[in-house]
Length: 265
Image (cartoon, rainbow, N blue to C red; front, side):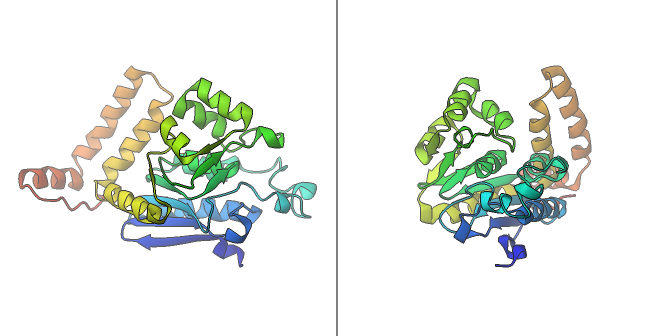
């Protein structure tokens, strides 16, 4: 399979789906896929016609982590590949890129997400799991730590104690356990997962995109600032929204009791 085909991007209206397309290798991430995934995320985020991004995995799993065979090849660890490189630009690393996107992101968790795959799933704004969905924090069982944002994300999602238990033991969580912990929003039949996530993404895309993106930025900022600073930041975000065409359309549609048609302006 051509390296360019290992990260596929498809459009359906205002929704883009980025698919990790390496099912024969359980969608493990090769060196080339790192840059391809980042480039796809950035391109979707910059496209004003894309209002929601779905990240999915082809085949029976979401992503089994970084490709250790690739790392051990002549272009991998022994030659400064991604697993051991000290020259990697983390600003362009997919989890970092994912964190800074303004466009809402959804993970379609089909099958297992281990290691890097788990961190990638956790980095999405919303996760929907099929019944076979799993999150595998296998890092400590491999002699490493969550290298792609997991140690930052997991305690914020479920609290320190639960996060510590999962990370320290290297535990695998099935879909129901993920739901009970709040790591996924819902669990559906495997064959309904694609439609379920697309429907949710389309619902998000039907909202005013400038307001949705602003809300995401404010939620992200709120993780790291006190209440007073946050309220002031939100106020400054509201002012330009009040001048937008979408605000006028939303207000008018409400008065006219009709569905608004937002333009992202």
